[in-house]
Amino acid sequence: MPRPGARTDGGNIMRKVYAVLAWIVAGGVVVQAASIAFGFGGMSGYVQDGGVVDKALIESRQADFIGVLGFPIHAMVGGTVIPLAAFLLLVVSFFVKVRGARMWAAILFGVIALQITLGYSISDMPYLGLIHGANALAVLLIAVYAALRISRSKRVGAEEPAAPDVVKA
Ligand code: HEM
Image 1 (cartoon, rainbow, N blue to C red):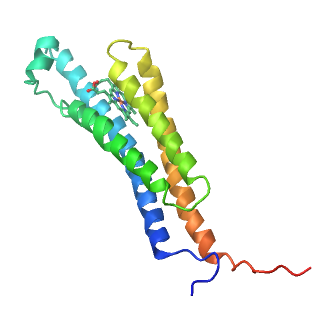
Image 2: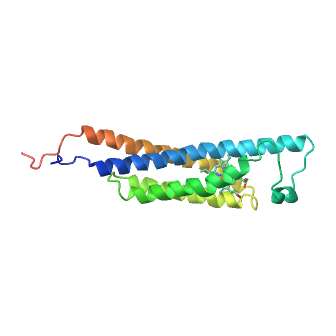
């Protein structure tokens, strides 16, 4: 018989999956910052060497300057990997019996939805890039916090003494 308040194996697995998904989001933000710097750095060097980046070059997908891979990586990780991990995290949060797990998964999902909306609007409204860059830090902090708090809840839970069934006066 498990002692009262003891965590089940299923609960532990769900907490682990929750933490892994949150770390995937956090790692994804690092990839995003790195890939976009790689892309724009390469493009800047290409232009300084006399290269021309225009609509025709972008649409031809024939650009071959160093760093050009950064753009599709940013679009794929930002448009697919991160939102998918955040969605799965939200789903898994419903099976994690830790207070606040669902709320932090929902907040993370919200800031990522905002981030993606901003990302797809940057070309039309470049000022949105200011929020897109800053909001990425919010995504990172929230993802790390969600991952750490779920791991800590496990440790605290394991050390918690069993709650008495009857409290004597
Ligand atoms: C949670 C992290 C991030 C997500 C989910 C994300 C997502 C996206 C998406 C979906 C796009 C549109 C791509 C397209 O039009 O095909 C985009 C564009 C862009 N993002 Fe991010 N991004 C993130 C972090 C960052 C960071 C940290 C920076 C730089 C500090 C950045 C800078 C840009 C820029 C400059 C663009 C426009 C250029 C382009 O379309 O390739 N992003 N982002």
